[in-house]
Amino acid sequence: MTDPLSIPDLATQFASLAFEPFRDGVDIHYMKEGAPAVALLRYAPGARVPKHRHTGLETILVLEGAQSDERGTYPTGSFILNPEGSVHSVWSDSGCVVLIQWERPVEILE
View 1 (spheres, rainbow, N blue to C red):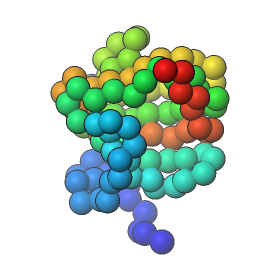
View 2 (cartoon, rainbow, N blue to C red):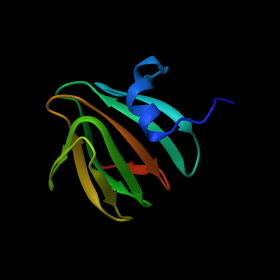
View 3 (tube, one colour):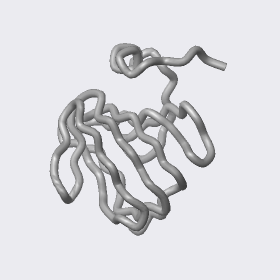
């Protein structure tokens, strides 16, 4: 088991964590797998996650860069809630790292 990391620690230490491929241009570091899941997602510039439906609440904290969806662009420090049943796609023009928590897995629609 790894030592707990505080949010400030994550913002400065995520570069040393082991990431694995998640989607094209998006890597993941699981902090807790299962349901709920907690992870760091690292988006390369221009990377995107296809349109998907949330089967449970998703919470996101943008740690670095900016993440976008059809509702807007969320810079570093933004806290985003995507309720159960919501549908969107996600991208990052400049690249970003986000802390994400899913109550349940998403359903990919594309």
